[in-house]
Image (cartoon, rainbow, N blue to C red):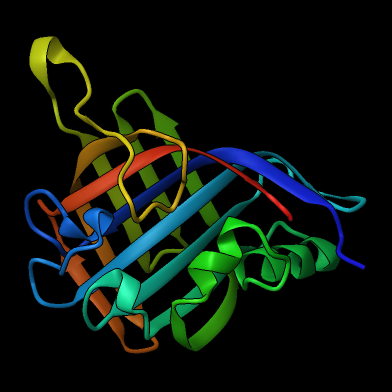
Length: 201
């Protein structure tokens, strides 16, 4: 019997693509491959009777080609503030075992390089998102300014971490990660953020 679950919140992704990232259009990365950090802040959530409010999750990923072609290498990071039941719930959701949209994303994973518990901080400010993974990795991104100071947004993109939402186009101030063979140290690359709304089947 499947366990009912739901979560809503905010997510960011920051990667090595330059300019307008083709990955969200199911195209090939601008560098031929793509390495990224993706983070989620859960405003409200539950997995059965396990509350998930105010917890964070992140993955570091390497895709050797176009994202929809799969074969990703990933490291899953879970908030050290989560207790054992919450860790198990987050692992089931973001590992794909609990169904819903995260299961579709997990279907592209070729190898899980590691699963770690870390202090995860997700800072949400107007025009900025900042994900910190302990002291060793981060994605710090700022929105690109559009016409009349408005956000630049992307709608109805075919390859979506947060389906049904409009992405805010951003640029990385800092993008760092260096473990499990997934290495990043960049700035000025493509990033996005938006709300997300996931639920089990």
